[in-house]
Length: 360
Image (spheres, rainbow, N blue to C red):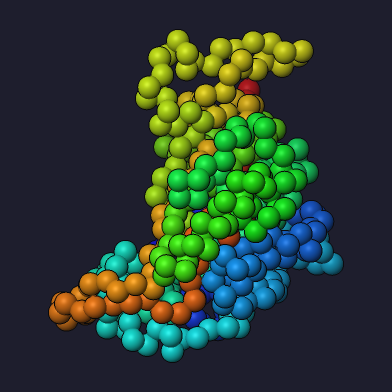
């Protein structure tokens, strides 16, 4: 199986399956002599882990990260950082009955067709359990970026048809974790939570939107052709389970705008060149322009629902299927730290690549 590594200079390779002994990763290219806050890494994992609220799957995983290389007395050595997270609460018997069934909108059929075999316990390698590995690497990247002045945060901006009305610039990051939905508006968050509970009681699921912001990103990060910063951000977000859409800056709203309105005019503010508006979302020509980078990530309703559905088994025979086990009725509250992490991995990787560019 290919495609288990992400990044060029700051590279993460992940391994493990949902119901195996452990999942883990190796980070290659981490700068040396950087003092890590290990508690902050665990805090980010706690934001993603299952069982944290009534709105999430009740699988109980401590998600305690164990670093096995690359760190000495809390400081990076510059050597590969290896780590594992042991799986503690697998209930593989919950999945015995689906070994011969292709679940609707899951990776069961495509995986079996591609490899001729699949680990059906919890989705195996295709399970969102793998995203815990990304959160570890992303938390390290975020700490390095913070030292460079770059701040990254994400929050839930939509669940179903319930939308946050605030613009990203009006959001206070401190408010994000004040509720279990991770929406920075208590009134909207309460409505979102009530709706998720209602959907769960029906045995159904619902989708949502996560908005991410990167502030103080320096000018010049990204490449102008295939390795555009926006292209790599889009790839990073689409690599997350259940993602169905990505829009940067004005996104799809730009379709209805005229160029005379949409263009971001330049101006000089103090000793810096800035733009009067930021419809570009902080990236122009695939390269960061120094303005806020902001984008939306759309998540579909979780595929496993506790309702009868029709599908086929591995012999192609029609069968009726009903989801069982422990699943999220809405993925977006737990997706927030994953989006944070993937954004940080892309920006740090491009920052390091930019620093390798020589101008004569």
